[in-house]
Length: 514
Image 1 (cartoon, one colour):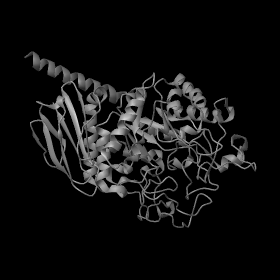
Image 2 (cartoon, one colour):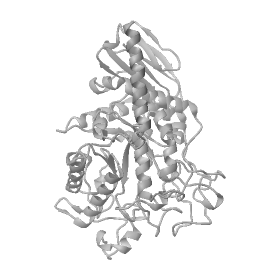
Image 3 (tube, helix red, strand yellow):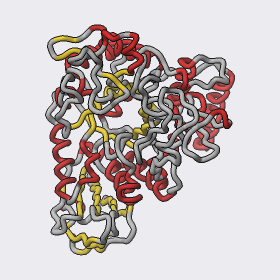
């Protein structure tokens, strides 16, 4: 009888809570940023998105958006409609590519590169839904608020350089060459190099640009910043800026686009700050060189990358982490490199390593990022460039383009499963030890993590053309435990502590012993 009373009481309490929420329409729980804590615990699944294309409507299928045909560009308000989709995929953080206004002079593409910023203190008005009475800042706030209501955190990208348009209006912000001309960094013809100073001097004018950006995105409700080409500015520059942001929000996350395999500046006129110095300056994380997966020839390449990354993270006084940057907007779609098998391998490497999972919108369904009219002439343009300039096989950042997406439901299902598995084994990954397993076949990799009477075993075939035999002794910690297949095609033979299986080209399997 007492159990019945308790159950009835719980139902009444739930009803009252629902009634209070409905009757107080104006009430909403205030969002409390926890992104830095989650990131440092390897507990974020990050999806990189481009608001300009995130929920665009391409009617004729040419890959690009022409509003005169009734096609719809992506904007902050229609982006809200895809948040439930992201949540269902297991995504709990989004990295938004730059939302700053875009330069129109000497531009790449008919909309201009997202990284060619013409202002750092305002939001690109082209990301607004013109049918709404809200201004673009208010629309951005609505999107971020809606993301928070879905328990999705928001990182916003800050460009490393600026547009030619900004140079015309404020030439004093830029580095000058021998002929007093603005400097082009690397081969990025649409941007010019900002003069941020060096380790001995911070240029206050450029610093104030970035300080304005920090104020802007925090006011919009952002939970963190990803710094484009972070190594192109001094550690002191970033320390000042990061300290400033943390005074406003101690949980504000900073990710440096920098890697342990990068060692050159973007210009002879630019500083180069190594990734470790950036982490010492206050950045919470960086890009592990996992994007080199396309070049890994054997298991030792993978083992070395994982071991070196984990060793690096232990060298800092304060906790740091890394993103699983197997793919990003600078990388060619894995589909074009080694088919869906490589994409699936990336899903499960993210799921079974102590890092923050990271993906690009469209990856989850196998987008190849090939655009029908890519690099062809357009009849209209919002810049001085009439070419649909694209990078082959990479998500488009230069035009008003189609919504990313493919049709591979197998990948989508594994994407969801992998993210759920990651959540369930995170304690093992964070507290266990990375243990590479010796195998005679160097095309096969196998590693394990063990903690609290649970072992996660991951086995993969780096040969994407041929079957390979995997034979090895399972870890001691896994012996006498029950084997649970999580990701598998054919059940391996496990006898007397020895694992035997034949893996299909590019196949990866995951087993849990508990």
